[in-house]
View 1 (tube, rainbow, N blue to C red):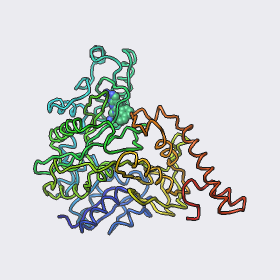
View 2 (view 1 turned 180 degrees about the horizontal axis):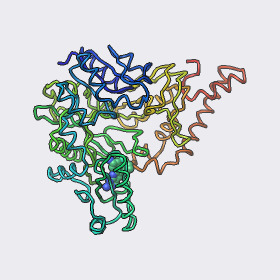
View 3 (view 1 turned 45 degrees about the horizontal axis):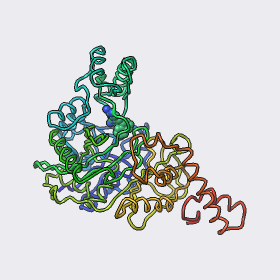
View 4 (view 1 turned 45 degrees about the vertical axis):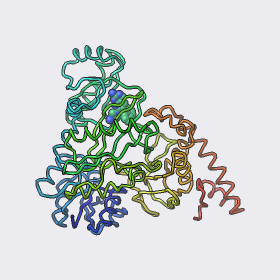
Length: 489
Ligand code: MV4
């Protein structure tokens, strides 16, 4: 086993990776940008090295500096977290060359799964269902128009180097398709430096269901069931749950077996996720995420398996200690991403100082966070404050606990999306599990959030007048209190 691991990431995920290291008796090295000098993860590590003067947003992409620190500190392995260099095959290859273990798949399998067209071809060959479409780059728009007639409109044009929804365009007819080809090509070239695009049939209002994979380097690949991530806004997931409400044991068996087949076709090792799109009882491969994902804790909660500890053991060459038949599902878990952003103002980021901070607890609650009271959230990175995970014996109990925890959460100094989560968790469609990737578009956010904010104000005012009879104090408390807590807690 490794003695020292460098964590090449920031925030809650850096802490998550280091927690596993500390449990396993492994020393931790953090790298941080100038902007993260006071971040919790830099304090949490055994040693922390600054790798970044401004621009702060670039530091965690500086391959040479990260590898320098690894050499200097004698780290034998690097945990990349998610985002930043986690799916960078060049970084993984540099690690391989230097004899440093990259805690993730090989650079080769990262490359093979990274190209969407190559992945479609590989999946076709492996017998994994793919969305009806063309498994080749578009170079002749005219023949593509013929192909689209055969597939049937609407179609969607995507960048081969893309992912996460960047540079996709839907076309309802031939003239829209001409425009979609041109604009997607331009975006693909400018964002990914690769203008290769392809086309698929557009599936209306699908659900997003993904399978967690664990694969060791000795030929064992298993799945840890599915997560449903249909509640998203502009390709950013906001609420995830496991299991998926649409799943049956038979469908899970089939999709799970397919996901394992997909991972094996990429020669995949370590933890990864196979994303599917689910529509009207059919499912199709969407992409392979070659990293640990933000939403991994809900899978940990319902399977009882610590995914990060398994990542480290797999990277050290150990054999998986579980077989597929050992994997169960215990209850239901939901994750809400708590972001410093304003749901009433188009989710505009709201960085700033956390003048008060108190996270929820009690039965079934897990909070993964990288912040503390008095910490200033910098404006350079994503706006996540924490991941709030609620577990219950069944879906409704998980929802009830999540709502209770959202009302326990005290975050003052920045605007958060907590009222948005309260609104969704109280929405009848959500409670009935009528989900789709269009849920948020069909959901009147300003109206629903306004109702929650108004109700909480009344609750706050009632509480405040019980605490104080000073009008100014009551007004201040009313404004601050949107929780079960008084502002003095
Ligand atoms: C699609 C689709 C409908 N039809 N492909 C979005 C992210 C990228 N990985 C692929 N995405 C989609 N591809 C076809 N042929 C709808 C989406 C999509 C989506 C997919 C998963 C999760 C959320 C989504 C939100 C909007 C659109």
